[in-house]
Length: 296
Image 1 (cartoon, rainbow, N blue to C red):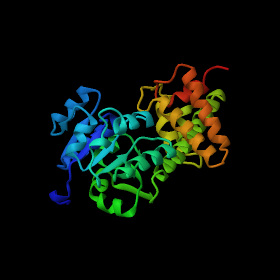
Image 2: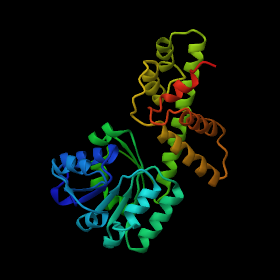
Image 3: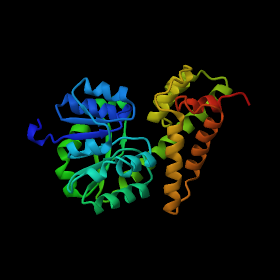
Image 4: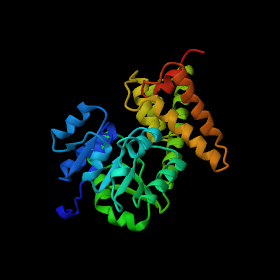
């Protein structure tokens, strides 16, 4: 067990699906948790179970040793760190900012540079696994930061995730790893949707086809997870189509920066873009099956 002395106050900015899961997990382990969210109802969910809410990121920062940023994108990250009432201005040298959204590697690098100029640590730590795993501490965290920062913050990192992947000492590499993973998720999901649409066109039973794929060389975790729901006609959003559309777009930009052309990734990205154009943006990302299985 972690000693109570190790449990320094943690601030979480953005307590939606993933940030909320992390907050609930830390509170259950008796960490002091401070929260800030634009949605006051979300804040209340956590003040009722022991968190302290604040009116701005800067107010939260005064009380916390580590700030976990769990907003949607780079623009929101910049706003909560460096905008009006942002956290960075109120932080003391030696405090840490943990960046959890999926954002471009060069944005992570830019934030890390600005934070370092103020004597602040940056932990590049994108997450994977969804809200349930954030809540029970079994989500993956891809962590890029100097080794001494990792050691100093190890108790918190281990409280948040039992699947910690130290990536490198260079902030930005966490983001790169996440984008590589998510591009493959997009390719695998698009591929699964395409072949099941083909199976449907061939007159095959989709459930039985998926049974075979799941026990054979075509299996992928995301294909099984999403296509089971899709063939049952369940497109209620667990992860909106917009998310993989955004992540595959970010991955293509990162590939371009590295001088690499991912042909399959480009096709997958285009498929998510088409799904959005077809009005499926707020459906579950299994909606690519709906798109591809439409009558010709």
